[in-house]
Image (cartoon, rainbow, N blue to C red):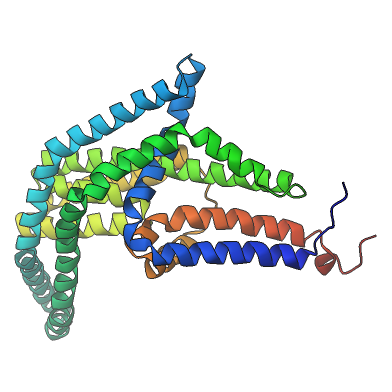
Length: 359
């Protein structure tokens, strides 16, 4: 049977409409996406483990059941043991934050006095005005963010939808993962099936490199920061370490947040520069390990995105979908990067680039 070949503009119009409609739909239902995105992430993360158990002779149902039960039991045990300590430290940190900022202001003002005396330039008034104009806003914003994390985080964790629906969604997506992939493959247009398969394989490598690799990096860095800062006696070292580690997947946000908290608490807690420098140096060592060893090896260069585009993706994702937009921004940007590189390759062999009509 012969099929009529559709013009290229109709293909572009069709897929643009599909993607645009999907984006609008996600924006409209963003308030209920949490358990479904979490379940999908769990299924995507655990699918290679289930596939390996299948190769060892286990059936898909048994392999999915074993992996799911172990994963959720370990997660629940970790939250039961560490969760209360983290929540208590977060509440204490939020309560003490204004006093810490006041300590930092006093330290900086005393430093400005010493600097003015040594240089002969009076900087005290300017520094005092700058601190007065920015500190209150910074404290208020940071306090609201952290209180929102505490209040909304506890509320979300206690939601029945997250506790019950996420394991349910994750289990059944993991069980049917291969069938879902096969069904999507059957729905691909025949004429473009080979091209779309290649694009999906590239996107899968991007997502796998980011989700599985970055999750491993986040866990390792959270353990390192929490253990190192707690062992050197830094107040709230556990919660600072966990926050810094788990926020590693958001470009620059995790590192800057952890650094700001570490410096602020160190300035307020210690009197001598030597004591103050120890937790800061440990944090910088973690940044070095994460940036030069862990992320290149575990995440790799699969994303192939410049840092500027990552920042833009995070801001755009936050504006569109809020918190989940920030989380999904980088992997989605990686997939968009695959599509853009494909479009550039096609453009460079098209008559628009070559300047002549292909025969």
